[in-house]
Length: 75
Image: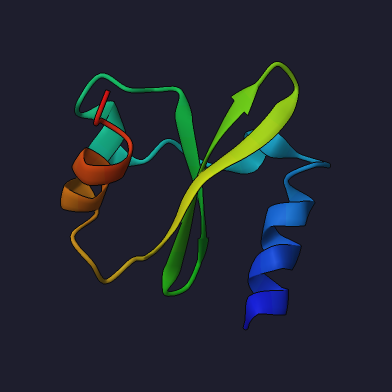
């Protein structure tokens, strides 16, 4: 499983724009994060100056809004 998740993340180097904007973030006015699904996981990432930065890999069955508030919106 870990190898497959790493492959999904590595594929972002070739096509970082392919991910969609997470609805939970767009609803909060945050459109700098993107996501890819590797069911049941969600890879949440940003593109910063041509570099893909993985913000988190979360189980999609969890409350993503709560996770985002704890991990991404602290500052």
